[in-house]
Amino acid sequence: MITETAINLPWKERLEAWKRFERAAYKKTLVYGNKESGDWKLEHQEVSEADAKWDMMQNAMHGSRRCTPKGTYTGIKHNGHLVMSNTPDEINDLRPLHDNATGNVLVNGLGLGCAVWGLLTMPQVKHVHVVEISSDVLSLVQPYFAGERVSFEHADAFTRPVAKGEKWGAVWHDIWPNLCTDDLQEHGKLKRKYARRTDWQQAWCQETLRYQRDRERRSGW
Image: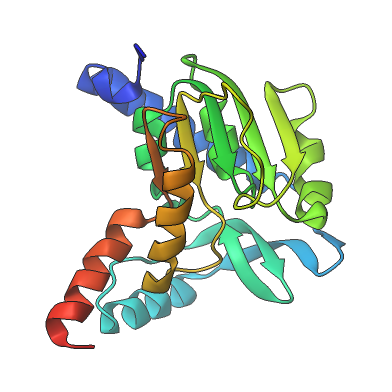
């Protein structure tokens, strides 16, 4: 399969393309209203300068460079637990998807929709198909994509049947609420499922978790 991806663009064009992706992922989700459906909730949050410094310090103590700068953000919560937000770190996690997406793209896990809004800025992406297990998440987020080149399917990414002849330019798996090395087994399961259905696929923070797992093994954890 011949593909045209952002990673093959000259570096200035690639940077400009990423900035468009990044901007859409943030601004398009910032306009969401505060609303609820079942156990799920869309909510805005203000992060002060003091909050940002505290977050940076706490993450540094745990060996992480992730931090949330001062600003206004949108998050989606499940039973009060923040599952996803449009912070710079979470949007930057989508960089591998931006660099490799082309043609028809499958996204397992809707969440806040940052990945989908970013993909829609890319001319080489023809269509985005989203698989989401929660009807409440679909109820909250799907209406904002009315008229866009996106389709939605209410299904479990693991048990969803793969149609005969189904092929994707790229597949992105993002169904986990937080980072945990135990999730690598599920990464592998989904990647095996689509191994013959796409030329490129990746799971959210896959490389970060592999690095963390290797550190744990070396440390005897």
